Length: 124
Image 1: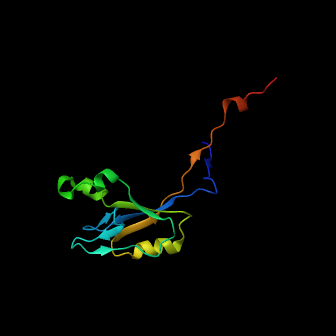
Image 2: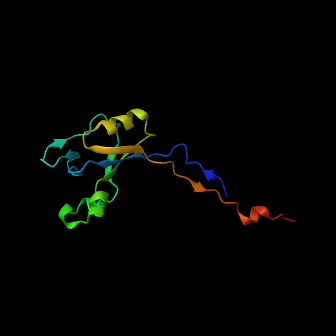
Image 3: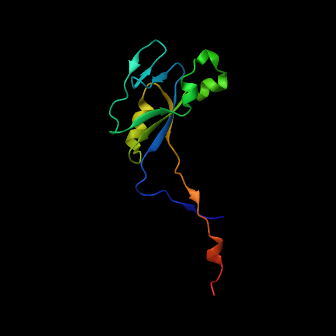
């Protein structure tokens, strides 16, 4: 097995994955979280150029009544994409939001390094 290739140092767009509590949703147009009573809440204090996104956008735009239980569960998964590596403070802030059930920093991405067949041959 080949060792993993680390991501580039200048990689941007790391994310914190989180799951909304039941009854909560995110209004992408307004940039607010909405509870089941219609109350709107802004996620303040985030780094500049951060953005919130649904993990499954097609389900996010569907009415919950039209979805199966599994699809309704998937509808609650989101991510906060931040311009730099998420710090523990950002993770703690997200975990403290009243609409978040669980949150964690997304795993490091990597691809296996490939040894070229040409590099194994001796050139004469």
